[in-house]
Amino acid sequence: MSNPAPDAKASRKSLATLFFCTAMPMGMWSVPLANVFNAHGRGHLVPWVFATTATAAFISPLFVGALADQKHSPVLLLRWLTAATSLALLLTCGSLAWGWSDAAVLICAQMLALVALPAWSVTSSIVFSQLHDAKMQFGPLRAWATGGWMVGCWTVSFVLRADASLVAGVTAAGLWLVVMSLTWRLPMIPPGEVVQHRTWKQILGLDALGLLIHRDHRVVFITAALYCIPLAAFYPYTSRQLHDLGVQNISAVISLGQTTEVLVMLVLSGVMARFRLKWVFLSGIAICVVRYSLNTIDTLASVMLGTFLHGFAYTLYFITTQIYLEERIDPKWRVRAQALLAMLMSGVGNLLGYLGGGWWFEACTKGITTNWRLFWWGETALTAAVCVFFAVAYRGRSRA
Image (cartoon, rainbow, N blue to C red; front, top):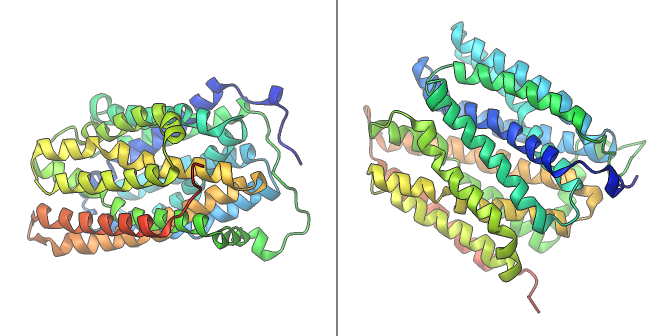
């Protein structure tokens, strides 16, 4: 089944609003999460709560991606996912407020991850399906998502004063219902290729693994997974370092990283037109090496500068990857390709990053004092190794 005709496509305003409102509750919960759990005496669960997104990534994104490509409209799937995310987030907050056991809290967090994680890849695929020229149009639209994330962080810090409060989570749950309401403003996009009798491999989305046969696709996917290992340290441990440095409005300070995300996304199409993709990819990873090395200085100014560079480090690799997949992979695989990226990033990369980062953090902590210089030098070295791997392995197309 073909995509909707151009006159049936959603307006740029609707797509920007969808991105903005989807990212806002994500930022409101993800950024203060570590401090919220610490405030409720569950700080020891933080690595495991972040790891729930990794375990969910092995199940839900490919499964939901296969449904969107072969069975149901991605718009309808997003509607279901956002409603379920709202309920699961409320239950997770309740488990902390009501003093449930560690196991019960983790079960609630796992339920939340299963429904929240595929929502982002489905949202991205919906936006991509409505664009005529992804390279030129996606960056400015994706900047609205970063804006939503920033507004979510500012709301937590300056309006709700909830950097360590469950109020942040409850408010985010309400905003997920707003995202659900927005799906009625979108055209009911048909699946890319309706398959009536699907095999178990197709139902689970495992046929997407065939995309790894292509050398450059494989290197881009594997690098995304490897890059997420050190990148997973950014939110949980930068917030702790800022806390140790005496910062109060932590969520607002961390939103500095999203400031540069917006700037980079607005100029990304021009950058991709002037430089080979390989250099765009590499520059993002190299900037992350610089960003983490700044954290080793362990002063407020250096950590803030490193956080400011986050937008370059994230956007130049991961947003470029999304555009790469949209342009170089068959459209009927659109959602599954984005889902495979989510699985490798949030599953393989983040699982190793959150659990490994948790172990490394404990190794660098004596009593209540953390050796932040040692911690971030370890993350810096790991990021540098990923940069070298990509430089050697990726070939790409020559500009000629």
